[in-house]
Amino acid sequence: MYKKLLAGLVLFGILTTILAACAIYDETGTSGPTVHMSNANFVQSTITITKGQSIDVIDDVSVAHTLKNGYWNGGTQMLKAEAGAPTVNLNFVGGDSATMGPFNTSGQFKILCTVHPGMDLTVKVQ
Image 1 (cartoon, rainbow, N blue to C red):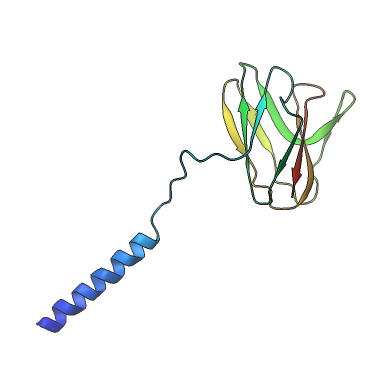
Image 2 (cartoon, rainbow, N blue to C red):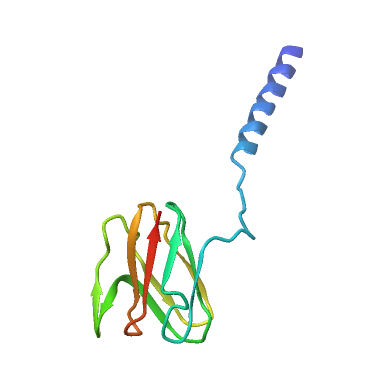
């Protein structure tokens, strides 16, 4: 009888350890790099981040934005993603935010707002 009780306690201890090791880690309150958008431009047109990071994009105004891979060439959208760039297709309705990334490859990546001509962001990943 003691052997069954001991085996049950050992099994319970192993299960408890496994569940504790797999617990969800909530990163609420932590913040990474951020980019803010105003009416028709990025508040900063360039951001430098570390490889593996994502960017929190914040729409500070009540203006819609649609972000995609690419850049503006005069009045023409050049929609393309550089090799290693994460696919960006974010829609904002105004006063909201979203996460872009992660950027897992070093390099320089271009992001544009398809709604506002000339609204470009350069992401430099080190």
